[in-house]
Image 1 (cartoon, rainbow, N blue to C red):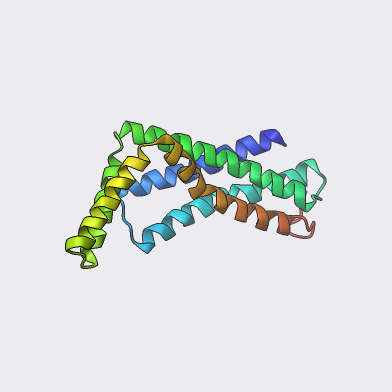
Image 2 (image 1 turned 120 degrees about the vertical axis):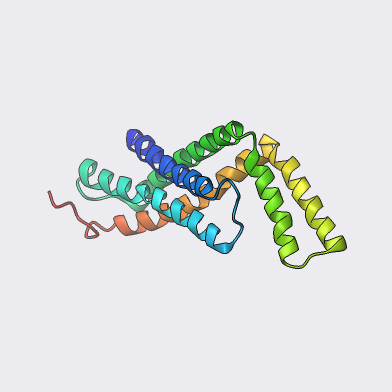
Length: 178
């Protein structure tokens, strides 16, 4: 089971981080703070973390004879989520280092531009500028950045693990045809 967790967790992490970096690259490195970009980001996570479902199904059908209980299926999904989350964090760290944290500067700039677009002036604009500068300082601290990056992906994995375990504990759901 451990091999399956690491294999499928690695696939999930690479799919997610690959999709995220592709989105960033196609945007020219300028973060899009709209709700559409958040939707695309979470959709990429759902696609990548669907590896949980395939891993649990594979384990149930090939190793357990077509039957798995909820808790082992859920824990397998959690393990895959952890592996995917660690890979996501590590590759994101490499990306940040390779780009000299350019994404953070672009994100802070986007925060200020969003405030201006909403009509912020004077004190409100100064508050947005201070908030963006505070964000840059916080994001350069690995004790803030690493858990924050992990928490972006892990809850999505937990939800998919829960759904996968609930569905696949029933041996009639997508039974093995072999």
